[in-house]
Image 1 (tube, one colour):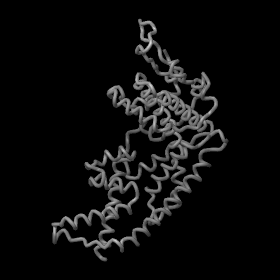
Image 2 (cartoon, rainbow, N blue to C red; image 1 turned 135 degrees about the horizontal axis):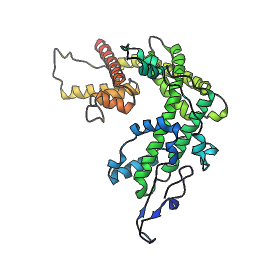
Image 3 (cartoon, helix red, strand yellow; image 1 turned 30 degrees about the horizontal axis):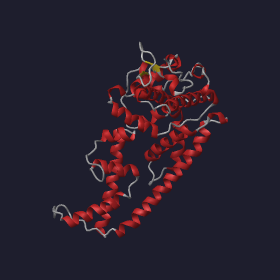
Length: 358
């Protein structure tokens, strides 16, 4: 029996008795959850390609692993901006019927017509801003589709209470969220240049552009998740305020961290022995050093502290993590993780140098 995905039914409505058996009390039941027919609509073709790459092979998981996956899914709400039309029987057909007509990024057009040119180290910054601006109709349509797909995923998440349904329902939830992420990414790409224009005004010797940019992109992602397009104004109006507040807060936090580091160094009182003169550290001295290292690590920002601990197997980290593993976990590039690690080490070395001078 096919589940009506546009308006999920009660649990009893989606369970059918096993074939060739009369309905018997407590008999095992067969659950059939089919791919929605509207997944094949032309407007979802590109998003479907993205979804096939992003979704994981849940069929390889054991029953226990599936149950744990479902339990974790039930703990985390799927946020979306609700709309009365989402519950209509033909909502999907209506929402995905109009053409978006998005313009491909310039790099995709160039790649189709010209051989790739040698890349400059800053070329990636230009590619972040090459997506075309959205019209109001395109922007509204992308927001409507993203929230509808999340609404569908949240509806199926609410039905993760039957062991026989775990695999097909978890697969469908993953697919719906991946499709929603594709639409969200199109919105973010078209508005990344707004992040550039806002954060560049806050750059100085103590606040690097790449740090403000990465924090600004994260703030833009949160703004996209919370934006209600039906209020009648554009995302840029709302996002500009969010980005300015976020950049100002980051600048203030950086200043407070610098002041805290400068004043706190005088209280640590550690005698650091030159490794060239004495490589042996007694147990008591090692314990003091570890304690002071924890205090110095607390002066780093959250990303630096996490990366340093993971890279050097400190604290709860039992194994040394690779740059690529940390990049996958943080959702950034391997090079960005290396830069953050280097920045954190430089701060620790600076603290150590100042402690030697005390």
